[in-house]
Image 1 (cartoon, chains in turn green, purple):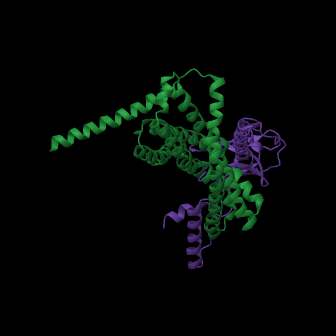
Image 2 (tube, rainbow over the protein chains, first blue to last red; image 1 turned 90 degrees about the vertical axis):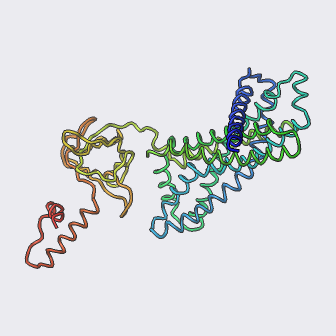
Length: 261
Length: 172
């Protein structure tokens, strides 16, 4: 009984280790390839459209609403201390440091990550990947690499757009609706937000999240059981693992970047 | 035609992302106004800098003329040595100016205010502003207030000199 459960524990651990190793080798093989600009650039553009442009609308709408809510909630709290001018600081630091990268990454995992997994899973189930290999085209290079780079490029841009739109949303509520003087709104914001410490660190966060989410999505799709059920499990895993790893990575990165301030 | 719209929308996306970066850099973090203005360094020693942090602003008559570059403990004099970076175009601060640590609002951030003196010689790079006034510590203020209250109640004893009150207040 006990020996059996220990044996199962060991087998599970080995299986997990093996899948982590497989994911690492997979990423390595997809990326370490001689770039061929003539064929890979159009593929990259196509994936940038699928991953970035199609996520554009959801990012703008959710960024705007999160900014509006932050403005409203922040105003209600700050007004009790008579310091509603600090609303710009509150909204911009929250968005640039945390909410911009994190919420964008969560939406990205749901919107683009799941689509990537389902697409590649279906390619595998219908044996498109195998036939590609048969005619001498490396599927890692042709299918996986452009999708990975598209995620790598889109995520920071989406996070920047999210933060910018959110700050405009906070300004709409604070300045135009609730009547904070716009000069002090912007001046307090500019005093407290540092370009390198806040904006660039937020960008680094979003790049890390982009790599993590895209990697998980692609690997789950490539590694899934080639059945309808397998694709559904893999898609669920992409969203769950992607979101969890984003939140965990966010804690680690925050501790490193802002922990000793 | 299909690839044209595709490329156009991707281009639009990239431009929007870069525009957002510029918005965050210039409008939100105010990068343009503080891009390494040429400045010179001046030192000042304070008994107590409680609450002052690096990057706090240095003002004269409320106008920002520089920022705090570094704060460290002067091990010989056992007080705080503050390095101020003052913009080069503000070059007529006389040597007998007073640097004091002030508070924005009741509980706001601490910053340094410089009140110009009357001397004809001006501080240069590496000089020290001799006259300083330390940070206002709320506990000392409460101590003084309580001490004054106690002496008022006794009636006859006059209020002692304000500099000695914190020490006496602690004896209670």
